[in-house]
Image 1 (cartoon, helix red, strand yellow):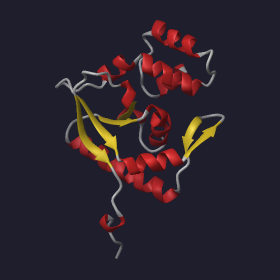
Image 2 (cartoon, one colour):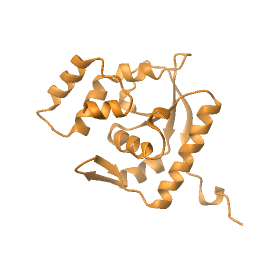
Image 3 (cartoon, rainbow, N blue to C red):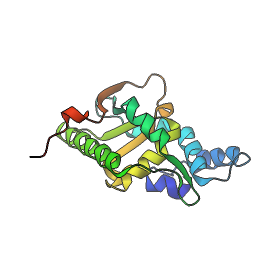
Length: 170
């Protein structure tokens, strides 16, 4: 569980809260990935505060519901890695092209790239992205981690171009 948190660049300074979240959830599961998500919920205020921009807002990229639907349909359980995404190659490439576009926009706008997705898909989507991008270049947070009252601004929506919008090869 601690390895999962560190792999995503999260601070583990608040060990009492981390250990409490693990202890509270151990009777339900021994799965380190599920325990990591429980710890993230316990640390949600700290996680979100770490990503607030200088203007005090959380600038996020939402994910198009059509992509969410495809991700949900592609979830598989792996004994070693927990829930993972098994996507067809073409879809994987199209999603990553859209992610690279969002990453470039974030760099141009001088903001950190933060994707927001459901708690259920957060870990598999984050692991999917880390296979292509260095994990320190983006964050994936669960919508459930954002507390009421946090000023959140949707900077963009991650979406796939329709077939008509894709460039045609000559």
